Image (cartoon, rainbow, N blue to C red; front, side, top):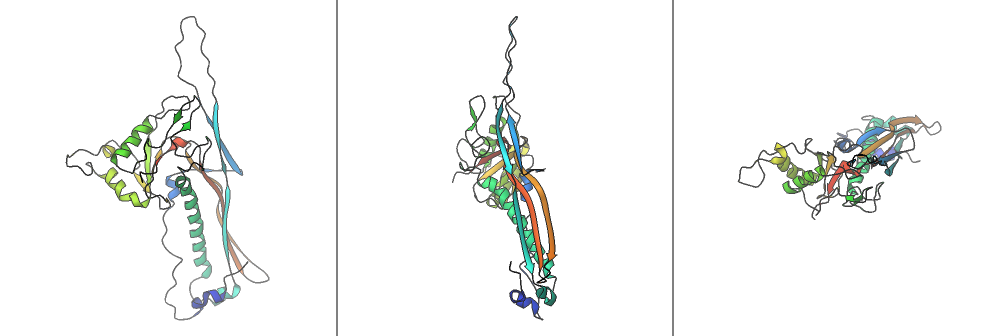
Amino acid sequence: MAAISRAQLLKELLPGLNALFGLEYERYGEEYKEIFEIESSERSFEEEQKLSGFGAAPVKNEGSAIAYDNAQEAWSTRYTHETIALGFSLTEEAIEDNLYDSLSARYTKALARAMAYTKEVKGANILNNAFNTNYVGGDGKSLCNSAHPLVYGSTISNVPSTPADLNETSLENAVIQISLWTDERGLLIAAKPKKLIIPSALQFVATRILETELRVGTTDNDINALKNNGAIPEGYSVNHWLTDTNAWFLTTDVPNGLKHFVRTPLSTSMDADFDTGNARYKARERYSFGWSDYLGMFGSQGAS
């Protein structure tokens, strides 16, 4: 294992250096928390099962036998935790001869930044592959799909009938479509959108659609129905790790949607090698991202 040596830190060992930079940039917040329910885990994986419930109750005619229904298992989804880890090592001499700030403190901040970056990328990867038919959930379909199979033989969609860019009409249609969702047996559920998730390229479009009092782009003085109705109660959140500049998503109040399981929280540690005197630092955590009920998300990949 190679250690960071004095040769790699030559300028930091010289007097007269005015500033050290490159390790202390500001970073975005924990944006994955705007998308995923967070739960702890005590196993190497977690598995969740979707149940179908019952169909609509029929009329019982006088003197006839009561009808009996069977609850069914629809499908299951598995979250397999990954171990994410990174470390660095400093030679004893590099630590001794450094004339400025503590090397270990600076590089520990860089280590935390690297770990946070990986977590954001892995979280966003769920949405970046939401329309990828090779990236499927427990029902064998992509997260956002027009043909999720239902137990009673039909299908349900959590995408627009035609891919649409983010605008007033497409967002209103999404709200209506979500309100018409059913369960596995075709019974209407009271699903509602919660938050709009967008890439940074759509932040100004989202502001105009959700935060203006009147409709955008008209002279009719009509109210902004999306804002007036509180149709998207939690507004919008920008995720800087989304790769498609046209895709947009709506989280819903359907439980057990997108989940982030934490098996082992982030921990850091250090030790010293007796023979070399090198100081070794590492960070490690175990977690998984995924989804159980696809109805926790509505998505459009945009028209272009």
